[in-house]
Image (cartoon, rainbow, N blue to C red):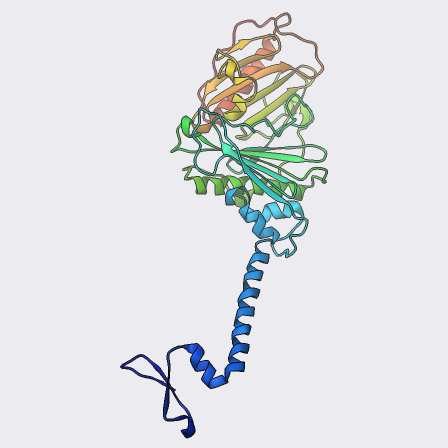
Length: 384
């Protein structure tokens, strides 16, 4: 067998009774001569079978839990921690019963979000939402910790502006990223919220994987949307504490450090969480909220200061102050409210001087950690 260099034809040398050369213009003809018609057909069927099997394998591969997870939320999920939360591994080959769904939604009409946002997905019980910080819908939408003294937001730490809330059968985590190259009209930043599967035991391992899942999604979302940001250190993440701690005020080292109006306080570590709380046991609940958490803390249509029109003030159930912050943190909103179950009204029973001093101290410490300006002065309505 040789190829004619001049004509580019394939010539096959056969025994004498076939003649000296036979010109074959294609592979099928060559195979027909060399193998015989029956053998050629057998070979063609084998090739076609392999092609069908290959296509079938590729289609089956797309149904693997890892592959289905990688496509969810526009490809912005960190696959390994999400699979760990579902109880599957990256090597799992069976996708039967592994349910994944994704959908996109719009944030505020005042925001033109980048392609791919906003989106939410459910990966076999792990729910993740990724949206812009400005106009966000899900800042408090997935949380029940507001007004709950037993479930406070615990910071993620390691440079992340995020937190986790752990309750009996579920944990939820959020991360806020500022995008230096996005204006408020373009979204300011990225907000990611993730929930562990409901009715599962919230172990230390679950909390760690949830922290990895929410920070991983934030990083991938920033990469895919062109957000220029400074992320935290994922490699040093540890499982956030499952609950706040109650200590004497003099022993407080976190969000309640320096409080004097109550003997006992309930606090978390002090970090750069976009939601922070300190409970003055038997008295007040102090809270700080930034960016979308400030916007969503009350009806923001009433004013940008946690739903108020003025930077500081007093109403029936709230005494507040605020500060101006950078990037997606927007406005820092700091307020005191009566503890759950109290019938106290500030219009008739205003803060004492010690309580007002505690709110001012709480606000100033939080603003400093977040790189915000000094909070506005509180109204001078304190009683002795």
